[in-house]
Length: 76
View (cartoon, one colour):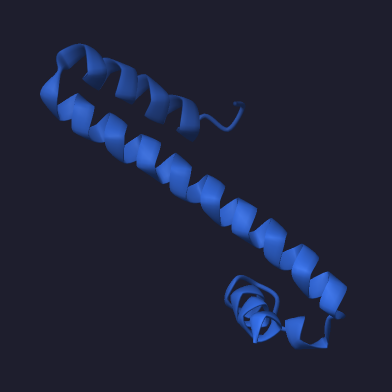
């Protein structure tokens, strides 16, 4: 059952042929996918926290603005 869940995870995140992978490949790719999803969730949480802080404090608003500008800069 675990492999079926991992195949489903992979297919939902850009691996349409995951059902053809070997069990080892499924496990490895699913672990990487979970790492990427966790990192993205942590990044989003930091941005939301910064946005909330920006609503409450002028200095936090400036820091948040700089953070967003850095994210939007293609050279960073």
